[in-house]
Image (cartoon, rainbow, N blue to C red; front, side, top):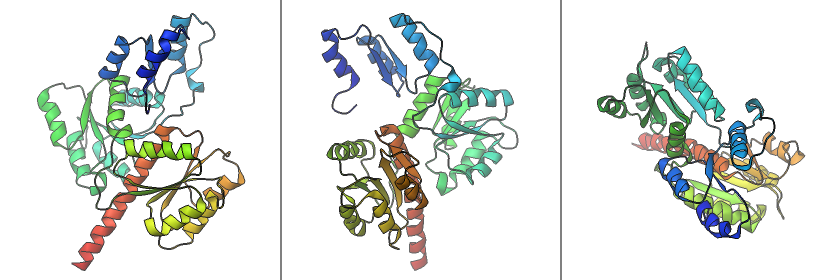
Length: 350
């Protein structure tokens, strides 16, 4: 957390005897975090997203609370949902890996071999690819080499899944263009490490042009929170803040943002009017818009924004990891298109 993390908070509140048990929660499960928890006054930790059955088990263990065990299928995941491609030929392995990833809350597509995976990448954007090494038709090494030849996928995380622990085999994975590897059978903590490293905490690559984001928010606390998030998570982004719709529309013309993050209910000029203004101007009508609001999804203003082409509507209070994941993903796609356009224009001049 900003300013003070959970360990610092615990140091201050634990001497006050406010509770019998203190549990840490974290999305970054690695040896450094678990070791620090073990040495602290936390009784244990839970990894996010929290599984109801496991949380129930902890309550029984630490608080001696009984009751019906919650059903896993009733659990609704509210964290960052990743689009994942699993490239694996073995049907049993496909089912096992898919089950692990879906129970973590993610969307999973499966390709039976590397050639099918290449075809699927043409039709859908994935956050990460899990690649088996030994497959018929096209194996993981050849598939990865082919994928890396396409500039669209030069920064797509590709992680090898292998039962071969030999260093030479691992080096072959990396030489082919893979980012990392995890052993089979895949374990949840290893997958979390991969997601933290290549999806949740990954910075944007360097583009020809610096990404520009305009935040339109009238609440000062929310402004500060968003500004801190961008500075800590996406420091390469050029950021401008507007306190209402009128100021936002003034900045749009001079700043030319690639992405606009706007509140809906604001004084002087609300978010709907901002989007209308932007869509009516040819110079920046293609800028992507994301909306933050406390309004329900079926409210007239939100429905109007969807009609105007807004794809992402985030409910307040904002889930920081969700928001930053979608911002990072959108900016990457936007800037990749912009870089290709600039490159083509340069080639045309030459």
